[in-house]
Image (tube, rainbow, N blue to C red; front, side, top):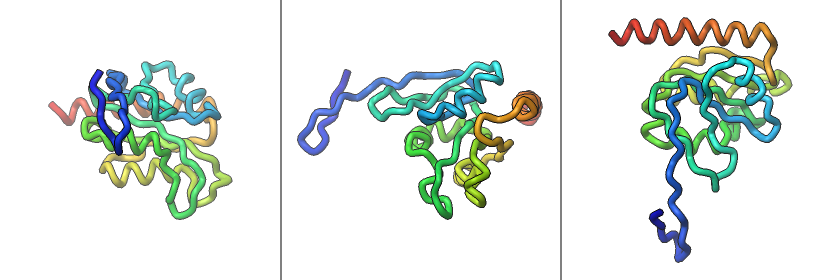
Length: 157
């Protein structure tokens, strides 16, 4: 394991954990987003919660599921862990769409993280759901993902 010198301190360089999942998500300690994506029954990649954990590295195109944190006008809406994940050029190159989780109590900021990421990464926001989602949300997202990946594979031929 290589080490980097940072301001006189030794920082261990952690080898990334790779994922071939087409669905990558971030969930805070509330686990709302985690509970939702688990209901989808798909292979998942999870962005680590703690900076000390090994970073996640995508190895194939994926859709990102991300919650919105509070904040006004978008500031602070995208979790820092998601920003760190997308700052990796390989991850940013492989994102194909984003799904937002949020709370309608946030008003205009509802699912804003997904909108911000979609705009910055030039990918579509595919869906929004509140908190842990409803059974209808699960069905719509599953059907929508199937359609999305089928259409994407047809346009890349």
